[in-house]
Image 1 (cartoon, rainbow, N blue to C red):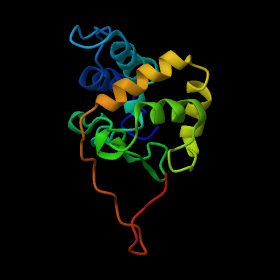
Image 2 (image 1 turned 45 degrees about the vertical axis):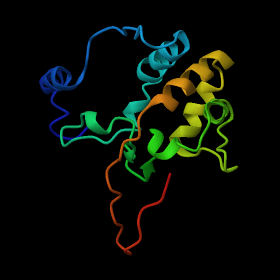
Image 3 (image 1 turned 30 degrees about the horizontal axis):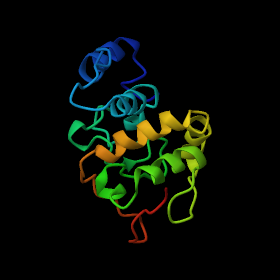
Image 4 (image 1 turned 30 degrees about the vertical axis):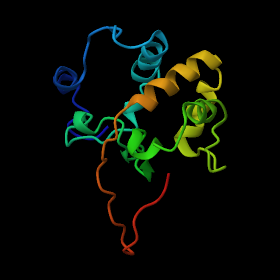
Length: 158
């Protein structure tokens, strides 16, 4: 890890600033399926870790949670998974994607998302449907602008 993240004592400060140590609390206003989806997406799936932009200290930009951004692995762009980008996807489309990696356009997931799909494909249909219900409920959020690459074209890698 790069400085200052290679200094062990500073990790505690980072955790204090950016990690929420609270257990998941269901929202009584939502369905059991929605709450299951929220638990899976925000907890076990930790989808926001890749699908959210980061601030200068490496913390998730809360106002753009799930709005995509630069790939944390260093190359390409991670898609926005709020209704900004998924408005034309049905819950069934999302659940199918989580099972097969196939997008409604016929394209397939690549990169680190292909590894995620290998895991989500092992979930039950009910769990994937719950995740889809939760993701479909996320409001549209604008993500950060894509950076220009040297030749003047936008970076369109996924």
